[in-house]
Amino acid sequence: MECRLCPRKCGADRENGNIGVCGVAGLKIARAGLHFGEEPCISGKRGSGTIFFSGCSLKCIFCQNTPISREGFGKEITTDRLCEIILQLQDKGAHNINLVTPTHFSDKIGEALKRVKSRLYIPVVYNCGGYEDIDSLKSLSGLVDIYLPDFKYHSGELAKKYSGAENYPEIVKKAIYEMFFQVGRPTFDNEGMMTKGVIIRHMILPGCRHDSMAVLDDIREIFSPDDILISLLRQYTPCYKALQIKELSRRLTTFEYNSVTDYAASLGFNGFTQQKESATLEMTPKWDLSGV
Ligand code: SF4
Image (cartoon, rainbow, N blue to C red; front, side, top):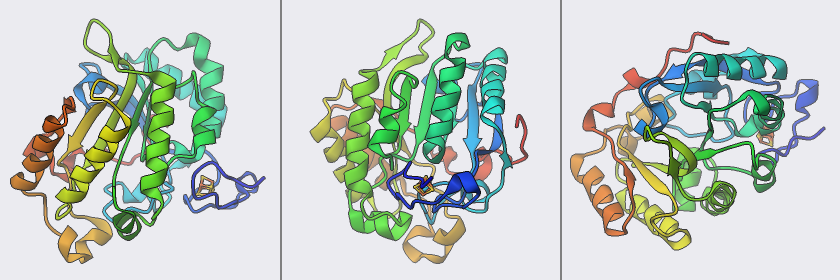
């Protein structure tokens, strides 16, 4: 069967072992465990039960997770094993199940979530790049509680240059609208942990603060500030192919970051900002198949 799970719609016959543009055929993960690097309402005190999927349908030249996103690191597992991992993370005390880079496995994930639904009492977080197929998202309706998409670019030119996806801006806008349609405005439990809603993440890139502001304008055109939360990331660290590109080979300046956070506040958005110290690769998990 031809795969059309993501906007690439490359048609790879993954069931028969053919690898798609996303770099994988079968269900593959690199790590599963409690993770503390997300927004406070996701990580909490006990950690987010995070499952890192191998492969990616975007081709970001600054990716910090290259071993799993581009080089195929990970172990193939069955959908049964994915169900076990989800329930094991819940047993370990995770605040939620956090599916990282899930897009190209949305069919298998949907199947697993349906199977564990009656035993799962913590929220499911869909932590994705925002480059999503609407039908794949619709298939997850009622199974995902919190959407945590990136909104990376306003400009198609930048999206093409840095992530190999010129149509990213038009795709992400439709995708986040569908996400909001499914889960609604943010809700929290009495510990301040998120139970439903959408957090839109945006990482500001060096030299791109005007594009970041245009991203915020795009979001404001679709949503009122109470509809969603915004998480503005300053963690950009030059790595991978970005090291060879002059404009991407430096960190973000405080001026660049503050100008974007100030602009978000002027539009009335609420959400999360990051400390300067977060611009390090130390937060990147070890890819060691733990929990797999
Ligand atoms: S999920 Fe992978 S195989 Fe399927 S359409 Fe997208 S890139 Fe191609």
